[in-house]
Length: 99
Image (cartoon, rainbow, N blue to C red; front, side):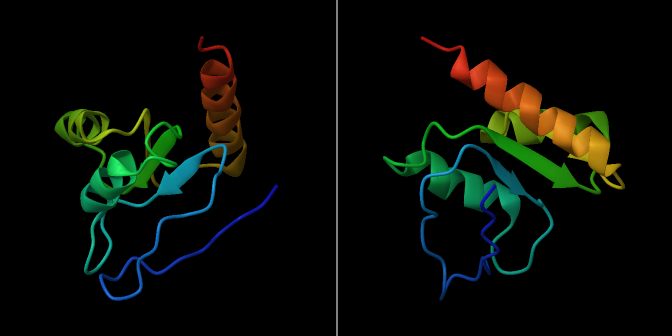
């Protein structure tokens, strides 16, 4: 497993290298998770990578907003590591089965 930790400031942002899945917070300074996902979905190499929003925003409308922004899963904090790993596995497997 390879992990990239990156600042999402406007000054230092760069598209990530190819990954199997993206996990991002929503409430970040300078560039929130919605803006990040818009940038990623606009990129040729990152437009189809499955993504999980890992966030403290746990209302039903927050989940709807993350899905509308381009995330495939919405996981509320706090989250058990086993739950997060299972969510990642399920998402990657679902994307691997796509035509």
